[in-house]
View 1 (cartoon, helix red, strand yellow):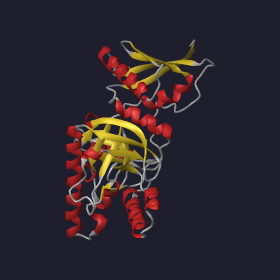
View 2 (cartoon, rainbow, N blue to C red):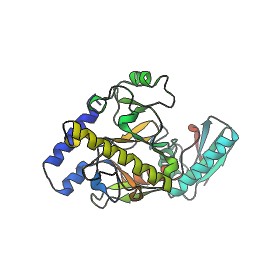
View 3 (tube, rainbow, N blue to C red):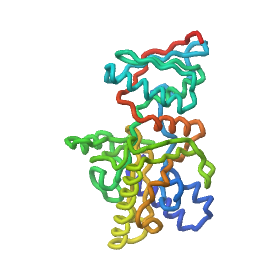
View 4 (cartoon, one colour):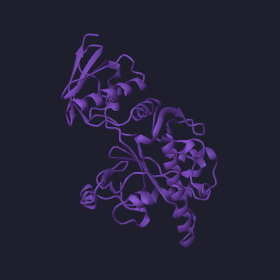
Length: 316
């Protein structure tokens, strides 16, 4: 990723819109986070690639020749309360993913998960912490903000975050090596604001998506965030070059990865977006990965990191 990542993608989408092509083509251009019921109100910067959700092993073929696997994880930090919470979350995630014959047991320092060998890839995808955050991009970005901010090296992002309580160093899609940002302050929404997440199909593009419905407080927070972004963009357009070049962004983050950075079209949604419509994650998803992402988000985040220690074939 080069330093003009966000400005370049914004220009590409604005140029695509200016050609007045059909809605079908416009739908193919849009990727990332979009409201389910009011998709036209948000124009989205493209998400480069599928969400990387794994424990480092990816979808490898399981070891051994048995039809059942036992995976043993260490929790960091360890402790009875931590591992019990991890066990509860993993049971809920596996159930949401449709793995009904999984067994999860907790010990003082970790947990074991027994699943059919065919579910190995699901366990890998469901193992990350699953911390969801949605930020006001412009107000949270640390460092120079001209042209929407530029991606930097990890060392530079860490330098910008140093000494700022709550600051986070995050990878952008395709980050290597200069694809990092630092965000500060509290996110506008988190996992606590998600009432439900489920795999679905976008009615316009027919692509797999993850639909997210908010809690009552989440709906209020989302409306407030998008209203602030819309009004700020309109104000900047009036005092500057005008048009959507002044539009303001929100950033959706999963763990340490920026999933997308959409901007609010203040011309179509001058007062923001109704949170009751929910949002959706799209772009580069397959039906299988959409199911896994939805399951990951549906049970809330883990309090600990899961570190795979062993993997064995066992009798079914």
